[in-house]
Length: 147
Length: 77
Image (cartoon, rainbow over all chains, first blue to last red):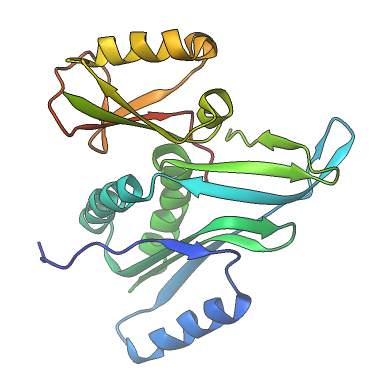
C-alpha cells in the first residue's frame, strides 16, 4: 500500500461538463486502456407535495468519507482489473440539471470498467456519509432519501 | 472526561447545533441517554453512530478526546 494521503472526492458546487471532458482527454496517454465507463448523477426536478425541487444542498462527514473511500478504493482494485478510477461528488448547492456525481472507471477490457462503475455508484449511495437536502421553489426543504 | 458529539443532516434539525461537548459520559449508551434527555425528538429518530469515524453497532467504552457522530441514513449521489 502506498503512503499517499487519501484525497477527498469533494467538489464545491456542481461538477462542470468541462472538467469531465478534460478528465477524459487526460487518459489518452494511458494507452493500455481499452474501455472507460462513466456515470453522471444529475439533480432532478422532483415534485414534493406539488412543489418543484430547484436544487439539492449536499453536506457530508468529510473526514469519514475520505477514510471509507480509501478502503472501498482498495477493495475495488482488488476485485476488478482497473487501470484507474476517479470519483467526484458535490458539496454545497447544486441546481436542477447540474451534475452532482461523476464516477469514471478505466480498464483494458470493457467488463471491468462497466461493472466497477455500476458497483461504485451503489456503494457511494449506500456507504458514504453524505446527505442531500432538496430545496423547493418556495424555499421549503426536504431531506433526500435514497432507494 | 470530555467527548465531542457531532451531528449531521436531519439530526441537526433536532439539535439545532452541529456539535456538543459532553462530560461524564464513559460509554456510548450514556451518551445516547444524555442526548435524548437534551433532545427528546432523537428518541424516535433513525441514525447510525460512528466513533472516531468508524461505525459502531454496540455499546463501547469511550475515552477522553473521542469523537462520536450521529448520522441519519445516507442520501448522497
